[in-house]
Image (cartoon, rainbow, N blue to C red; front, side, top):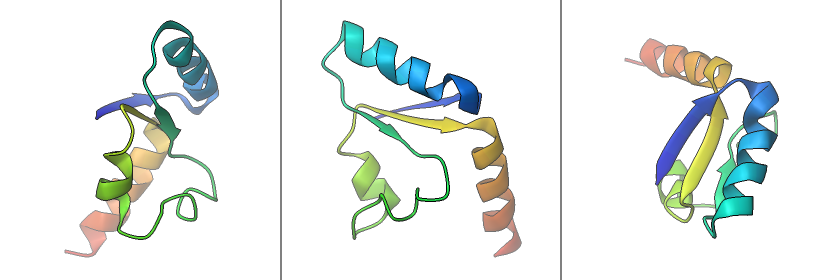
Length: 71
């Protein structure tokens, strides 16, 4: 699985280009419904079903900060 971190405004463009030129499955991990979109078993297992996971800089920063606070 490849993680692509890009501006939120470009995620749909990345998905379009990836699916246009390849058969790779993409998952967009972004927005308020992102937690609902992950099936039972957790993110690692869910992300493993896709060739490419797209997310934004902002989300990575926010989730990294929140996970850092748990330590």
